[in-house]
Length: 222
Image (cartoon, rainbow, N blue to C red; front, side, top):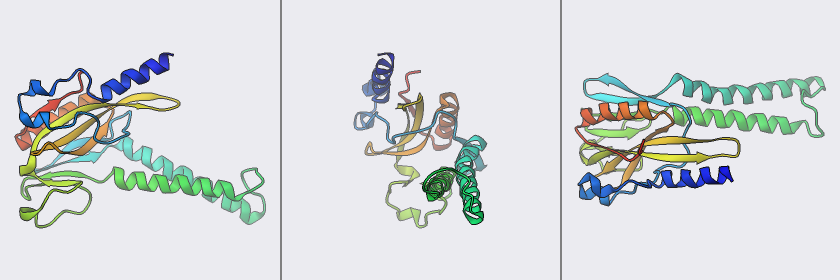
């Protein structure tokens, strides 16, 4: 019963319950969605804003996030090596009718870890020299005539910064994760980061607001 109540309250928080976009006094806010832009998230701080130069800031992954991603890699690789060595000497390290099952499990963990690390450590860049935002390792070219895409946009198209709450419910634990999204001039959004440290996210959003000269729309309600 208690868990059901928690899930119900979590869904209301994730849907921006109690927040009135009209209170912002901006017509774009009324065209903007206030539910989470990206499902999932993290219960801890995965990114922090870093000043790279006078004209460039970016969100970089934290040490804690990198350790978390690498744990999957090492766990999977460890199982693979242990089981392969057991098969080589005729004594599979993990009991079972099919000694290849642990190999598959180890491979899955290793691949998941590599993917988490690759995508999780990709920078989120705001560059005033190129007048562009992008998410990824490859810097876009020709931003003067660049049209917005899924993970990039000209800085001139950024209308505001949005903070929203998402309740993530799992079988073993539940937690709140907080999103920082870019609101574009037509009310569409691009997700920047999504993690569990609201104080850090608010601080980073404030610094980014000054850097871009754009307002922060905070719908976290905390």
